[in-house]
Image 1 (tube, rainbow, N blue to C red):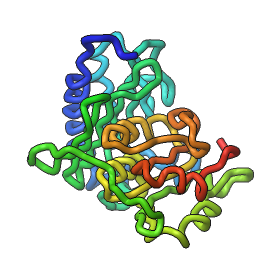
Image 2: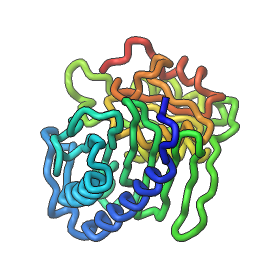
Image 3: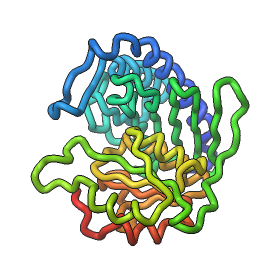
Length: 281
């Protein structure tokens, strides 16, 4: 249980300011993105100078504002890559550029994602898509909201779609999809596509979660995800009235490498089509 008197709204608002500043950094780098691309091991898994510059701004801001908090950041600019900076009750989980491939290729579906977890349970989430001019923000018990440009925030609610035949779904495909023993998601895609209205794959897990939260999508699933791919968007989904689980219907979605998010009404149906109790990790 979160301690009494904790200002989750303050944490949310701080994360929003840092995410928007990082978004400006990304946009400043966008013109030169193609010349600053590196591979992170797999040829298709990219990192850019923009990722690092955005992460530096976020992490330095959080460390200054909350020196007792831990930080888990994807690129390891000021902290160890992919590992929490220390043991603490509060941990910031950061993806400075979710959708790097889109960013490199000029597709505007990318975002900055910042989440705050209390004892490993995300309770604040902010996802800012600078090229789209959209910001999603949520905090436990305070609801979820979406802001477009300079407009006022609008409360979010998931869709009311109750039949899979009427549902627009989303998914993604891992960078390691062609490696031996890995699940490439094709069987799940084949299982659900004949039964839904249609399916999209736009390349940013955090934004896919947010678009599920606002009712654009009715459900979304993906495999081989890290905590910084899902933590912020999952809070937005939950606070918009949706449901988030792993692909077995349990709660191992933050570290388990797999996620299913929906409007809640379709969740059990989606589990029957794309879920498994033996999903690869």
